[in-house]
Amino acid sequence: MKRKNKRHLKKGFKIFLIIVVLTFVIGSLQIKLNKDNYDNTFITENESLIPDINYKEDLTTLEKLKILSEYDKRVDKIINNYDEYPEILLESLINNPDMLDFVLDYPDKLGNTYSDNVGDIKDGEVPLLLQWDKRWGYARYGGSSIAISGCGPTALSMVIVSLTKDKSMTPYKVAKFAEDNGYYSDATGTAWALMSEGARKLGVESRELPLSKTVIINALENGHPIICSMRPGDFTKSGHYIVLAGINDGKIKVNDPNSKERSDKLWDYEKIEGQIKNLWEYYL
Image 1 (tube, rainbow, N blue to C red):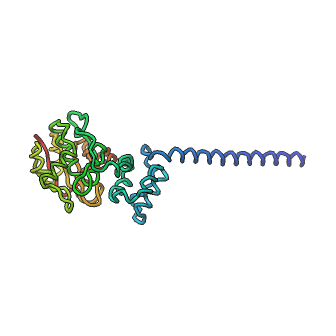
Image 2: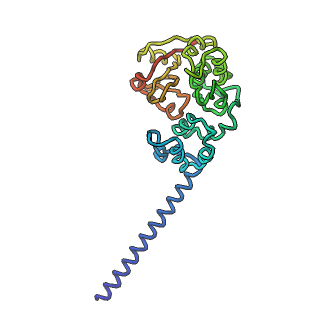
Image 3: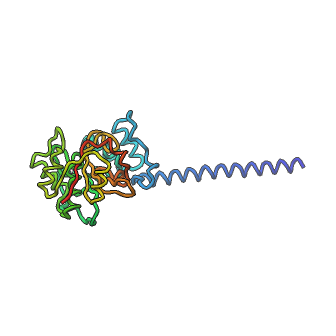
């Protein structure tokens, strides 16, 4: 009887060992498969899989890029040619992984434009245009490029296109106008005057608004987009222009020319109110 029990124990122990080994092997294979999947493209459908490095103040930009390279090996090209990329552009990439394709080509395409129109637009909507769109983001704007410094012209382009339906009024065309007419300087960026008198010269009416929830909601409900100059906060670390594009379920639709992610969200007025420095309403 004792020998029989011992045989059962040995058999059970062997089965247990086999289960442990199989579990380890399957787990290792799964990890490798996951890593292989992450090597070639950023994971954007499940943002929790992208490391949250935006607030790791103790890391340098290069160190943050090395973390991102573990999720997309194309980042290695940037790391290996680090001095060819403006630091501010790489900081934007860290915050916006969607920019990777654009940033990879930056040294070769800087100074070029690739379209004279913004493409299809929908009636009644303010199109989301991104300053780092390949069609115009490489174009020079002052001492840098539209991708880096062109939030103002890109915001105004969205407004003009939505109101006039003139697809040729690209961020590049507005940026060129701003430079040629003294609305931009490398020291201060895009002047507020572009949003008022500059906008009127480009074919849309503009008026400065008070910072009032009622006034803003009324303007948006009337189909009048609003451009805001922003303080540091959810949208910028220094200064930035965004477009308030509409109202949905009592919340504000924001078109941020530097972020698809922030543009996909609806915002409570109270969340953005304290970040607004100045604002302008637009109409025909």
